[in-house]
Length: 263
Length: 263
Image (cartoon, rainbow over all chains, first blue to last red; front, top):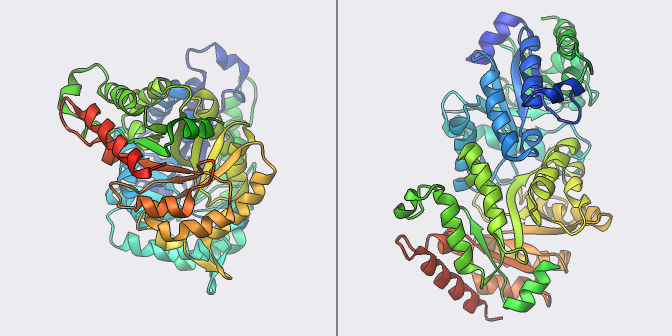
């Protein structure tokens, strides 16, 4: 499995989030035919030594329309094939529609994994789990403030996010795809408990960096022998610099996070 | 407001879902430069007399890649400007990402509304509500079997879907955008209760037709003086015919549903 190999090879759990915003990239790139793509090309080249995964946030590409969708596909093709890729798309719909989304991200584009929203239940998630060698990261306990609105509602003794994990573990048991979860780094206190509920699952952990999560706490609670965590940082790495040396600054920031992991 | 005008003018609550699947459209269309677009063009022309809204299911376009994304934008431009449009996209992410999705569907493309998933809470939904004259349909009680997995979990006396409605009503009270809900026609028994919780909200009701919901029950429980319901049918209308006359068959099916509404 790509992630295990990358982890063993790079001693890293770093995932770099390509939340590429045309309004935030260095101005000199605007002279290139496709500034977002040029930005991504340089960020990927500069950080591939430390990153075991890249996460492409679909919103940042879709908002550029057709051209953005094309840039997403081209960006995916720039990522070295041994590095794991995530479509951060938060999709989820009735069965026949989720089947189309799975086709989009696993066939039309060849992502290794996708983030999926659980609200619509089993038939909205299972089509994504029908692909061998692909992974689904189901939203469990997210990093944002709004996580408190519904994810903590309690039925019986358990909050919703724990129901999502225990229920979806049953779906995964009968599927060829692999199931992981999105758990915000800002919720490190709960990662230990989540780890007990799914001992071998990969957790995609956004919220380090710009959102303020605690790296050491996340590692202590969630790391497994084979890795088990994808620590995502987006803005703190890709926008570390604003000038011609932005890629070097990004590399330095990625290296710093890699060193802080101390694996 | 477009929907009120359309309702008054057409005496209809019909929304036609453009879930256009290249594998299901009549074979003779494959000779056209863009078969999906030609299909949509004819379906729209044939059903516009009865439809007060068109719902574009983004999955069916995304799975065709860049070309599909372009077809979605072109399809949107084919819809007469007085008819209401819905991006059935089920998006929802942390605040800065939802802002990008809102930009995608309300600015890059000029949809009148979008479907949004509630799992990530307030900051994942509010960016969509920041647009005056636009509408958000938040998933509440969906039409699929998987709805039972999480939407019925009870915190205190209320199930999750009711928490979603009551909590989000507070967000809407402080927003310029309008908030409606997705409620499956297969859940008609609960529409009356939902109507009491949000007396003036538009409910987008999929599940009539291919999914088997009961039209009269939905109308009895959910219709308001100004309309208040968008009864969506996708497959049962757009795939009513398989031959050269598919658009006429679609029109006949739309007319039949319009007549059954008896408004």
